[in-house]
Each structure stands twice: as C-alpha cells, then as structure tokens.
Length: 633
Image (cartoon, rainbow, N blue to C red; front, side):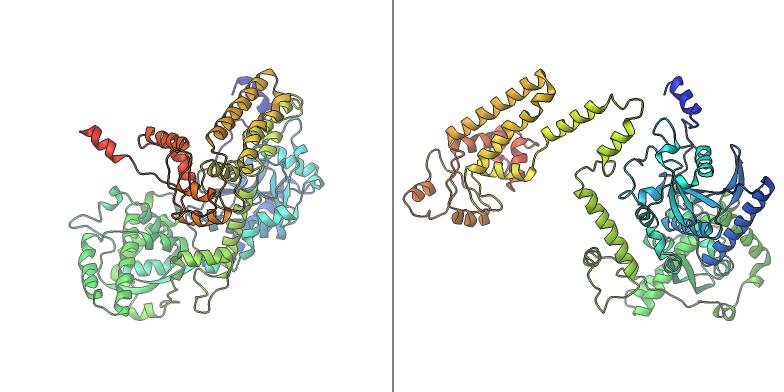
C-alpha cells in the first residue's frame, strides 16, 4: 500500500491496518443512541444496562460452564464514543459465542435505545450465517460495521452509508449514520431468520449442552469441584493442551502431588459436552503413583461384570481429570484465566486447613445430583445413524431420545447439508463463496471507474464459456470413439460422436467477433485440428460403430474389452453374416488400440493422458512387468 492510498483511507475514516481479534474470540459493543440523554445520563444508562446484562447472564446460564472466558462488560471510551465493550475467548466451544449473541439480543429487546454490534475473528459471522440470502452488494470486503442488532432485529447499514466508494465503515461512521438516519437501515426478515437460526434452541438448549458423569477421584479434589464446579474447564484445557514440560512433574519417580491417588471417592461431576469429549477421547498413560491403582482394576475388569467395568472406566476418567488439575495447580497463579486463579486460591485454603475441611462420606451423599450419570450415547455415531439424520428418516422406537438421533441434531444436520447442496448446485459459485462473479463485479467496480472494467468482465465471462465443457458428454464421446458400450445405452450410433466433434469445432466461433484477429487465428487452428482429427477417425473406421443395442447391453455388463487384430474380427464377421458372435466380443480398430497402449506404456507407470482416459472409462491396465524384467537382465 503506497502513502497516497493510505492517506486517502485515513481521510475517509477507515483504518488501513485494522486491528484483528485473536482466534476463537468474539467481541461485542453496546451503544445507547438516544439524543435526549446528557453525558452523565448516558453513563447512568450504560451502567444500568451492564447490571441488567450480568443478572440476565447469571439467571440464564446459572449452571453453564464457559470454555474459557465468560460474558463480561466494561465501560469504554474511544474515538469520542462511550459504550459497553466485552471480549470472550470461547476456545473450542462455539456454543459460548451463540449464547452471548442470545443474551445480547435479549438486552436489545429490554432496552429500546440499545444498539449492539457483535463480531469475531472471522468478521461479521452473523452475515456469514446468512450468506445465502444477504444482498449481493453486501460482500465480505465492505461488510465491516454494517450489521447491528436493535430491538431484537438485525439491521443492515445501506451501501450509501459510505459515500464515494464501496468500502467498509469505520465504527464512528456507522454510529453517526445510525444517529442521523435510523430509518434508512435495511431490515430483511430472510437475512434475520438465517442469521439468528441457531438462537431458536435457546435457552432450553443450555441444559442439553451439559453432561454429568460419575468419576472416581481424590476426596480433596471432589470437595474443590463441589465448591467451584467451573474450575473443571481450565483443568481439562490444561490436560487437553498438555506438553512434555507440563507432564514432567507427574511422571517423576516420587512426585509431590497436590492430589495423590488415595482416599478416593466417586462423585458426579458436571461437564459441558465439549469438555467431556475432550477428556474422554484422550489417550493418556497413567502417572507412576496411579499405575498400581489403574493396573489392579484393569486385571479385575478382564473377567469382571458390567458393574466392575464401569467402575474401572470411572477411575480412568478420574485419573485424567486429576492429572489436569495437577497441571493447572502448577501454574494457576500465573494464568490469565480468572477461574484458574480462583482455583489456586481455593487450593491454598484447603491445604492450609488440612483434612479437617474435607467432607465425610455422609456429607458427600447429601450433595445435589451426587449420583447423576448421563448417557454417553451422543458420543457414538455410526454411518447408518448419520445417514438417517441427513435424510430426515424417523427414529426407531429402540433409539434413545437423548442420543445422536435427537430432533435438534437432525434439524441442524439437514440444514447444513441443504446449504452445502445449494452451494454445489449454484453454477455461479466460486471457491470463496456463492455468486462470486456478481460479488467481484460489485467490489472491483466503483463510481469513479465504472466505465473502465466493464469490457474486461464481459470478455472474462466469454472466455469461461469458451473453455467450459460438459464432462458427461465428453465421457460418452470418448467411450463411443473407443468402441465401448456407453454407460446408459439407448442408441449406439455415430451421430453422438460426430455432433460432439462439431461442437468442438464450433466452440471458438462465438468469441471470434469479440476477440479480434489474434483470436480468429487461434480459432481457425482449432477448427483445422478438429477437422483433421475427424477425418483420421473416419478413415480408420473408429466412428463406424454399428453395434446392436441389445448386444451392447450384454457386453456393457461384462465390463471387459477384447482387442482384436487389424481388420474385421470374429465378432464383426458374425454380425455381417446376420448371426451373433459366440464369445460376444467388441471389435476395436487395431491402430487406435495400438496407439492407446503405446501411449499408456510411454507413461512408465506415471500419470498421463492415456491412463487418465482409461481411468474415466473404468479400465485399469497392468504394468508391462515382462519387459521391465527383460530390461533388468
């Protein structure tokens, strides 16, 4: 970027080097746009919104465990704007992000003057969700600061909000336009429905995101988890992202552990499904002090009952969770995570009080949901279940309601597949998204250069049309030229091959008028080459395929081609005599077969045109091992 362009962007109010969010982070800004409020009244209103937001979060997500950071708001002043601001690192749990969007949307309904902007490291992810229905002019290059939530609705700032050129808006420009022209914003029910589709399952879905499991772990750790259930998140993250340095203290011959494997109790621990899957799926060798306990249970489980096998699995899971807390305790005070620091403080208090602070077995039996254990069937997905979900088939009576076959999973999967199919069926879609041509046309052209790039776009479209071809027609043409029965045999004749050759010859004619003299010479060369190819094929008899359709069906089922010598073969003589061939072989011109085999041989086992053509037709020729062995001698 040169200095002149940078100065122009600064003058337009756009930062040429915008700040980017870290990965897996969502950022949100809450503005109160009320002209009747004075500066002091604005601060009071923002503080009222912040308190209401925290109360709403505590009531809605009371038992929820955030993957890394929780929903949070602070007052911020920047560029002359005063607003509430928050950033949440949701890690691997995308549901944390959508829960925040749900809370923000609820707030905009409670406070009519509240405007919310929310985005993540991917940009305007609400518009990404509604990519199928957003206006064509709203491309990813110009959508910055254009999507806002107001009174529960998704509002879009129009293209005219950025005068002069098509570009993203700065935050100051967006807020100013909303203040001056609130009636000019665009509200589309279709865009809103797609963008907020994931919010339909809230708040009921919050309970479905949790998983309770019985695990066996030290009494001290059971007490800490009872006092601070959310500490399970940073502990599992420490276990899931472990490295050799973090594991080294655990693997010492005589480690000094905070949670040694003695005085074990079995309690129910609350996870999110993401956290449970992370710890359950990991393979982890037991630390030295755990090996004796784990090995004894494994020996018993070989010939144990189902109940004893469950106890062994609970002990193994408890070993993983305890190891995660050991890794977390080593650096709890130095971590940025608030839950990790709170865990470190609680651990110090427990260790200072000693065993007197630990609960007895009677105390543990009185804890809420101490024996709760949810089904883990949602972890097991096989191909048949997955295919049933995609097809929307009804569940069988024996299928469990809380497993993979639940209604919400079915709806989500079917929607994902339907969107993917729409994208694949969209002929204008490119590798960057749907309707790439239209979006590029809108982005590249501007009011100042509108008349300059039009011809280039039209010529590029014509070039695409000139080089495009129907793959199915090409396959059929090649099979007919080779003398093979087509896949869908209806009428085997030379008309198909000849018509395809005519299309090849005529393909350059459409662009002759537009491309000029250079294009005309190239098209003439193509036509001459096609004519020579057609004449040679006719001379060799490759296009004279008088094969009986009924006989072709039989031969096509065998998927076998027998090459005969030059001239008429045994099958062809029988056909001219009016009878059928005994071995029902397909006669192919000798020269054509010879050239094809020589071309395949010249590839020397590598990829080449002959091998590719044969692969398309489902044929695989063996390597010439005899000749290779002779050369080796």
